[in-house]
Length: 458
Image (cartoon, rainbow, N blue to C red; front, side):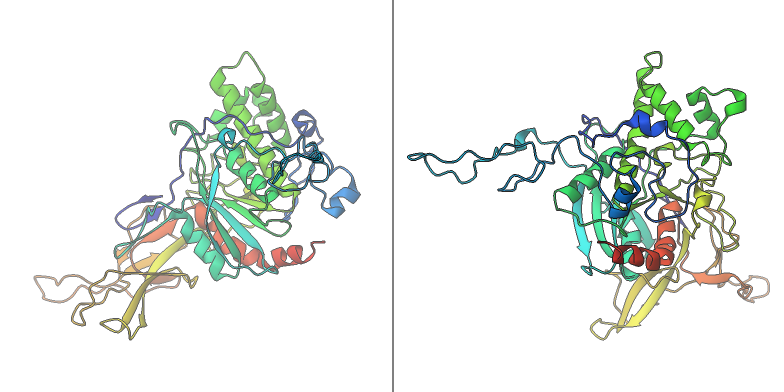
């Protein structure tokens, strides 16, 4: 998220992971890509059209069966899990020394580094849905004004907590050199592994949110060149949802095509693997949310076509000029991704001036306390002195002044600002905006449905 003098704009993170691929569940990707396309439905537990072993049977779907796995997950249990290929510990013979645990120990030296790190949890209500945020939490990069900086992921996480969700903060920790695009299948698969290892309790009715992406999403023109499609088969913003499986089938072919260069094959594999990782989580009943992108409506995120893609819309329902908008994002209800920041002053008798100052995110009720301000009673208190108009806001604009800051030298009369018009509000001057923050209002609106899904778990 880039920060200007008067506004905060969402920046998409670029990073790369050169780590060898982790073993995935036994999924026939060719079969899943050849499946006949199905109409997408808005559902918090939709499989998004990928074929997954063990879920073709309607009864298996009703039971919430998990995908079959090629090999058991490595655990540090004392007993051999049911269905494991590990051999039970041999019975001790007379005279053998005591063995604390005869099961083979995992080779920690050979273990791959984790792609996500749990850095925070809030809430423990089993009836409420949990949202796990894959984001940046340790680097405080977002300047909210008055000297207050917070982490990118903390903004959405704090809003979800305020709205009654249990939350988990997962620091995105890609490994390898950071010069190329990140393979987001790896953190997504790492979440699945953490679930299997008992480190995360996520299931039906819960959500994984990822408001990250690579440097810049491709335009439809560039992606059609990558696919090598004829003029009458081009992918457009309007046919993207209907053509999704055709696209993934073609990308799968490119990933195995020796005539394509190594970069093309790696890009294609990354797209297929990330969409597969999303489908695997959705097969568990976990909804995957993704910020659709900030490169305007003529760009899209091919890595996240299987996710619930969220675009930012104005109060009128019109997509923001910066937001991705296509037939996949239109399958989901868009939400607001732009919030003015407000200075709030509450009574605090423990402070020297009797005030507690905080920055509030729009009208969400989410406040971030400000520390380090001078506490003298004689110091002028900060206040909202800018005009914010949500419907007419364009990303990067400087907000106009609400109050005059000088006097006309010829008449000695203050230049008065016009009164606020309908749709305008007073604001601090900073604006936080981007598809990264659409999840705030979207999750709030979907909470009742997620609660019902969680309550239906067997």
